Length: 315
View 1 (spheres, rainbow, N blue to C red):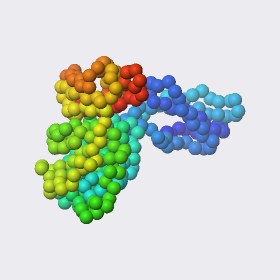
View 2: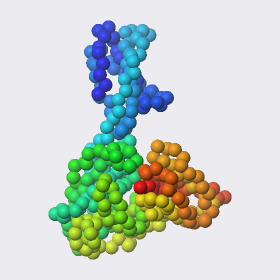
View 3: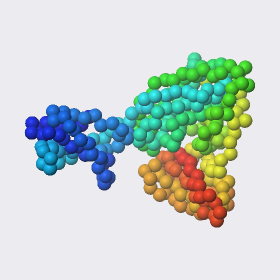
């Protein structure tokens, strides 16, 4: 909330604000001369802003700008979560985009189970596909934002969302492939991942589908009877293991040669390499912990120039 004292002589007020240490201002006009506060919307999480105000007493007659006031926004949860589509053994978990989020942390379980399983999702997509669920069972999940690259600053958890998978008999008549039709994230093979101080077993098929497991059971108990083999997709860019600690491999099935660039979560160039073979091993020993963007830009003659992107977590 932006607050100021009225002057008694102003006909209008003009406010300008911007992200701290950036060049461009956003201007707002206040036409009510007795208004003394404004709720600023659409701001990014965990971001510092500066603003100031001036009085307009007549056309062409305005005061000097007030001294700058600064504030930093918090890290807030999403307003809305929902599960759709839902099949007999999988679901898409959706949430409203959170401006300024570096990543999303999703946790879920089968209703009645004791253990929660947690997954980490980059900020490119506002959904996560999960598989390995049991037909006809209810599941609950929630999500929160990471506002820094290592999860030290995170939002509260969103309200729990609950969904029920379709009965097994309905699986033959449901269009399970709808969940996979828009999936573009790429994840790692099976690995143990530590998020938020809890160790979780996350099984992944390398194509963006992650099961919620409890021990050897999928998403809160019971063996997985469903198969998502028919949903598998191929993608030109894969990175593994993900998360990584000291090194990871890039696998690229596009046109060669290509150029690889690695960017930090703050937009800084970390590394640039030439790719002349489908595989490249990169060391990450000296990288600070955080989320990084991997970009592959084909430079071969006759290539379509499409840049492939994916994210990797350095622990």
